[in-house]
Length: 155
Image (cartoon, rainbow, N blue to C red):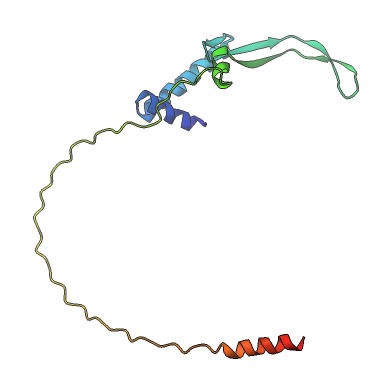
């Protein structure tokens, strides 16, 4: 599911227009990103935990040569799926029901427009031309069959 599809699904599920749903989804993502960038942990219970983790410098090993090397300290983004999400994803519990059918909005009553009837113009009668049936000459199949039979006998 892509972002546009997510926005469409949220709009249908929450019974709002796509523009409002887009603002909700974009706003949620922006708030999560801003707080994680500050170094705070964002925990959406039953869904996921978003965090910025600082890893210290350490000693590691080059797998090709076996040589010991020093790995620099770095900061990484970490997203951890929580128990509620894992249970639903793995089928332990049932997924929540989502509205997938867009509710029909009753259209506004149309304004009645009164038009004056224009006088009907008569068209001159078109002449019908009768097409003559053209008879096609039958194709001579007998000659083809005879040559095939003769060629088969020679072999």
